[in-house]
Length: 112
Image (cartoon, rainbow, N blue to C red; front, side, top):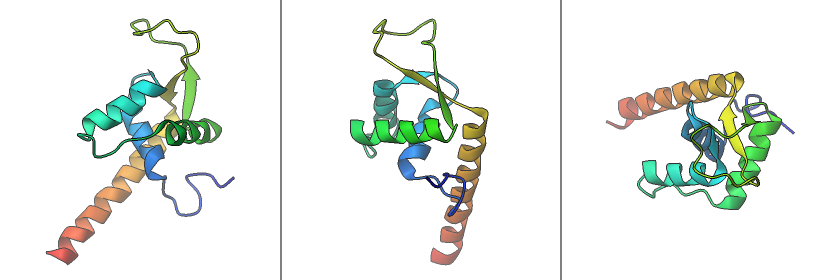
């Protein structure tokens, strides 16, 4: 499998959405989906299949890791898995965000 940071140097959009939704907090899958939908006003919705295949790839790439539930977890469901961004994941998300900022800047210059 090609690493997210190799080849095009770009993250698939769902992967970036997940990394950004995790921010500095550990969250379970449903919370990640809910937060993405809420923050984007419903413009972006990750379906469970997309979310969990993305998390699987992010785990394989060491961009996120599974972690224990936070002390203030809203559920004690043992089936619920919590994830957090790794140091590498933060660096990759920051690089992708910078790349997108440059793209927006170019768009403003050439389309105005």
